[in-house]
Each structure stands twice: as C-alpha cells, then as structure tokens.
Length: 105
Length: 408
Image (cartoon, rainbow over all chains, first blue to last red; front, side):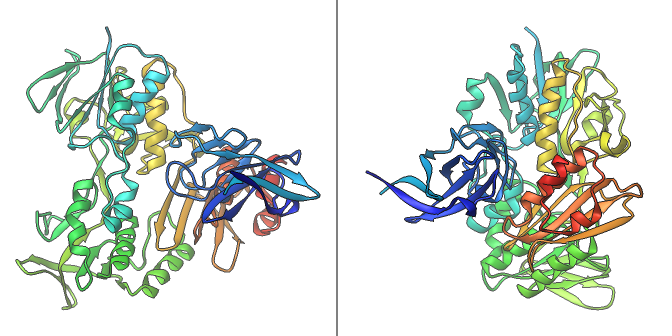
C-alpha cells in the first residue's frame, strides 16, 4: 500500500541540490536535477546514520557529508566507499509545482 | 603464485587488500594485524564506542574478506623483515614470503615517561581495547582528567560529559587545538566545552603523577593537585617505524615514501599514519597525516601501485571531529597563508578560507552544528584541488554559491 504524498514545492529544492523530507517517522532525501527532474531516496546514509540532504549533489550523485560515500540518487546505487549498501529509492514527480513522492503507508 | 603481504590490519591495510583484488591481483593476499579483531574504523572510538558501548565498526565482515580470498592473520605481529630473503617473520615463529610488501603499521599513542600507561588508572585511547577499558570509568560521579587539548582529548571529554562524568583537561599551551586549527575555531570549541561543564586549564606544567589504588593524582608545578578516577593521555601519536627502521628503510618523520608510496626498497610500500610522503598540492613538501581519509585513500593507492600502476594522489588533506552537536572540518594545509576570509553560514556556523600571497586557496576550516559546514567544506576541497584563486569577496558572501566558483 503506497500513497502519493506532497513533500514540498519544486522551488524549495535547489537545482542540482537536495532537501530533507520527514514523513511518518521516517526521513527521506529529495533531489532536483539540473533539468528539474525530481528523485527521492532514504534520507540516511547506509554507512552511518547521517542525513544525506546535507551533502553535496553533483550531477546525479549525492555525496555523504560525513565520509564522502557516494550514491546515484536515481537508482540508490552505492558508488564509492565507505558506502557499500544501496539506498532505497521512491518514485517522485512534479505536479503544478509541487513535489509528490510515492511512499509506503 | 605471487604473494603480497600487508602489515597492519586497520582501515589502510584492509583498503589496500581490497584494492589489490579490484585491480585484478590473483595471487595470495595476507593481512597481518596485532589486535585480535578484524579491521575496524578508529574514529568512533572516542565517540560512540565509549558513549554507547557499541561494538567496533568493522571495515568489512569475515565473509567479505573470505569472498575476496584475503587471508587475515590477527593477534600476531610481524617481528622482522628479511629483505634479501623476501619474507617477514611473525610473532608465532612462522615466516611469510612476499613479492611485494605493504607497511600500514599506523601510529601509537604517545605516553609520558613520568607516567607509563598501566592496566589501571592511566590510559591512552588508540584501540578498541583502550576504549573498552576507559568506558567503565565514565560513570556519573566519576572524575576524568585528560592531558592534552587535542582532538582525542576533546572528543573523549564530550563523551564523558554525555555519560555524566566530570572532566578536567590539562593543556601545556595557551589554548586547545594548537596544531593546524585556527584560533577562532578553537575558541568556539573551547567555549562549547566550558558550556558543557568541562574544566580547561591552560599553560600547566606537571610536576608529578601518582597512581594509587583509589585514584590518580596529578600535581602541578604551581602546587595544585587534581585527583581523578582516570587519567587519559591525549598528547599525540608516534608513527610505528621500528620494523621498517630495523630493516634499514629510510625514516623521516615516518617511513619515507615517494609519490607512489614506495619506500627506499622498491618492493616495499608504506601508507597511512606510519608514512611521510611528498604532497603535490603544496610544493611536494614532505608531510605525515593522521586521519581516516588519508588511511583510506593511501590504502587504495598503495594497492594500485603494488600492481605497478605508478599512480599518484591528487588528494587534499581532509579531516573532521565531532564534539557534542558540533562538527569541525578542515580541508587543505593552511601553512603559508597570508589572508583569511570568513564566511558566516549561520549565527553558529562559519568557515575560514586561507589564501596565499597570490590568492590561491590553500585551506578551509569550519565549525558548526550538525552538518552545517559539510557541503561548503567539500566544495572548498574541490577548489583547493583545482588550484583555484577564488575572489575573496565571493568567499565571504554566503549567498554566492561555492559551486558557482568551481564552475567559473
């Protein structure tokens, strides 16, 4: 059972940037690419519990602010150590300037 | 079949072992470590491991090493290198032949001649065993004395306060973090500790240290006596060079290596805390780094170069420290800087940029709550690596994105 949850406005996320989003006791990271596509992953790095949205976005990659582990935020794939476990990803889209995310519950 | 041996099973040695496989090495890989544990990360030792009683953060589990056919010999040390015979002697009496050898022997905590570390109330903090021994003393009502206002001492002080123990930090110099941290940032850290109730004494000279069954007493030259349940020494570390020195390798503030991490013997490499190396970004001057990031990156580089890759590192030094809610991060080396520019990210978070006489960015140091400074420090690191001369006015203006400066 999933629902499309309104998370924020597209303008709330910088281009080639990330933003933290908390919902139902869980934390996520939202991403806006340089061509305004949006993506959503789990909010915490799989290496240590650090909020990825505080990290640096370059192209389609998010780099953890603590130990520089890198993930592809489109697929959740761990691309550089010390991150070795992939992130979960969730469907996201923009509707009338609002970012919607498909989340469980 | 060729055989590569790695001495030292920490972050660096483990990373090198995996790098050998990633580079396609098909021979035998043996990783030898003195501690009776699989390779683990040291940064948490002064933080979570003490505070929460956590297990070590392992670099990888046993199955992962096995899958990569990395043989791990732990609880044994290498006692000698026979360079002519190309083998190393182990403390269990056996010998391991090598075609290439990596020394990732790390560093040891410095001790005070006047107060040798004991199994009791005088300790250092370097290993998981040290952390486990310190933890029971951290209970509420106990008093911890720490000699040295460096990173280990300060992080341990923050952990002790979280658990309710009172803390006195004894520092011989006039402030905390005198090595490589700007005074402006050290002051923020110092005030945070004072706010948490840590007593900090500067400019102190120790006259005597007496360990007793009930406490340890530190007598200062001015007549004061500090009594504590535990004394922890956080006075720096010494590179582990004895093995290399005995084998006749060149030593220069660590095992001396070239830009490929090769020692004076072409079949022997060294990496991590134990080695000194020429750093490209700063005129090739010889430095030694004690940081997780350096151990991680040099481990990977050593693995590649043991395979003959002849790669060099373009890395800029970077490290972090977590104390309470504060994170401090430094990228680059500020020596030689003539200009400092301050960028305020919030009322509590700021970054200092250090530029040389030509305006080249040499280093960036920041402090702030949580991850407030992380992204800009990372971008600063990229600006430093690219050898940029950013406009100081732009660096000082938080509304100017550093990413734009990087793209410019």
